[in-house]
Image (cartoon, rainbow over all chains, first blue to last red; front, top):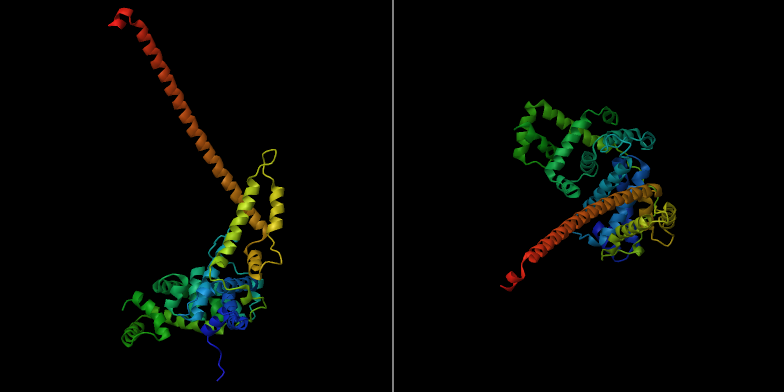
Length: 182
Length: 201
């Protein structure tokens, strides 16, 4: 009877000046975005920074949201863009230290802060993937988007998304730590 | 069905979005292909492993407020880039400004960075968070120094090119002048050789 207001209603109310609606929208998604960021960047500090960047991006772009699609897909399009940008910036700053700029060296203390052994193993396996493949795995298996949504969010074709997922699958298949997670 | 065709259908197979006929074809292929069967198992495993992830609570943070305004004009979207560009121009200008001995004055730029980089409390939270996060002061200073060096190298190169071009033009002008002088002397000599009688004719 008193179900939660749908996203689009909250967006409309936030745009009309309701702080309460805007905060509800953030509360609804911040945990999901934070965990997405955690898996993508591999440590809580960067994940918090990225989560903030995502919501700043949402705040800036909300007037442009037409409401003709699923709000979560729109939000994660911004998140994907912010994440790519974030990792590119981090890669730029650490490019002199890392042999392979495409991958992130797992930061041991940060991984230990992942709360559970399973989280730690999953993070370790994901961080071993190139960023493009990690993105597709994240959006498909953790966010449960369709390939059309993923393609739209990453600006690639659905077939490219499938190819990346397949390549990731081959790599993860041999990842023993991932088996330990279960 | 070939393995290449089966691979892409595996994802839809797991999602139960394949048409009955396609599903039957894939089942038939999976019965005979151990490699694709193994891929399907991995896919199912990965799907299960994703479910094992234990969501962590988001840390406390200060989200932007509606009161700070949803600006549909787009100015707000461009403001950070515009501010960065202006800061860059300002710092580059200070670096390029020569001192009495002709060298740049790093002290000046240091003061400017210290004065402009840290946003004041009057700035909105979003701008402060953006500014603090993007990079630390030292990194930015190093990037700017590299940029200034690049600009200087480019300016030097262009100056050299301009100087070379001017030298070429002046050399040709001098050569042309010499030819005109020679021609003038020749005409003068020829005209002097003409006798008064010939001139009257």
